[in-house]
Amino acid sequence: LMKIVIAEKPSVGRELAKVFGATTRKDGYIEGKGYSFTWAFGRIVRVVYHPASIFHQTDTHRNDGCCTRSKIYTTLVEDG
Image (cartoon, rainbow, N blue to C red; front, top):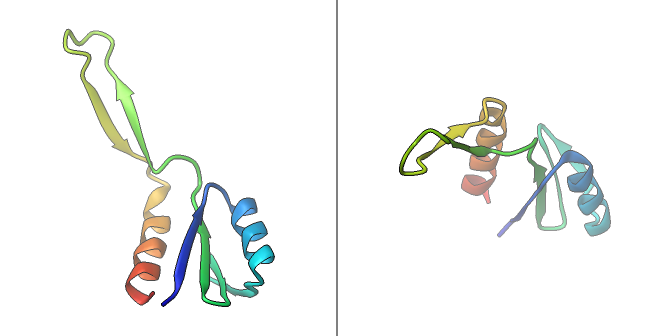
């Protein structure tokens, strides 16, 4: 069973992979020794506050750059 580690940014993901001895680079992740290391680019979802709302309404908005990363996460989970 592959363990998946999602780091907050690429440099952290690469450093974690190095520490754990994972050296096989794939498209968007690094794997080895029972681990897959991938990373995010900023926030995947952000909350937008509407100050004019009497009920302090918030909306969530998807980060448009997250789609590719989401596909990688999904593939790793399904294959893991």
